[in-house]
Length: 336
Image (cartoon, rainbow, N blue to C red):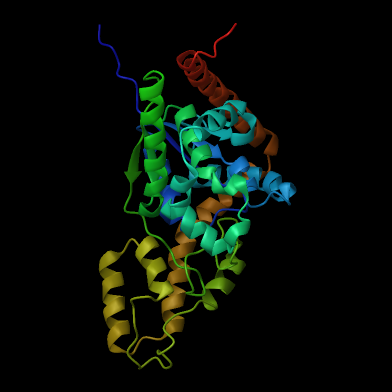
């Protein structure tokens, strides 16, 4: 009789501050759909983390929990393979966060490169909310509550995973080796610029193509995209590097040879932006049309979507409760 080796566990997720966009699709969602077949996958709807900088508008976060769940289903995340969990419904995560706060210093948090960058981007200065400042600790609680072995991230998020690993090592050394030390799973996914060419695609900057956008909306957004400001006439040589239209084609055009030929044509001149944008629109529709159709189908039965999230959250609560029991025993807090 053979014993089946348990699958390694992955934790991933998103802040439900708005619907997901094609930057998420290129950067993480397609990878998650592939990984769910090989790993035990938990997907966190991180509403508590979303509240760290949206605390004055909790309704926005609440409304977008189900919008993001719809996006998950539309791109192919399967509740039978990926467990959807609402973060706020697991009090164990909050309890772990409190214990972990004793294991890090303020100076260490202040020097976290990811936190420093995001504080600067949001213009907080000295007025940064404490909840936002310590969210790397909360993220460590997310990861360890599920006993995740792997966390898919981009390179910019590596300091967050290292913070978690440091907390785990210190906890296991001080108390007992009960926590799983996670590894970062760094993919080669594309990071798409915004439609305006002024930085990464972002919900808050209104420079995104959303998975829920209609075909007409996508067409309007593509027509208005930033390209090469020096490419004024079709016959002019154009720049491919730094051109968002070609960045999107790199991410979604499966005809790599044809795309390279188009890039060469654009560089030497004789290819207008209108024609390149039409090609991009065709490529995006191949990707987005089935997602849009599936999303509409799931949206017609929101009770089933809510039930999938409810059941997933219950499963997540069971796993987190097991972690919490081991943590309390290790710390001597198992009084009863």
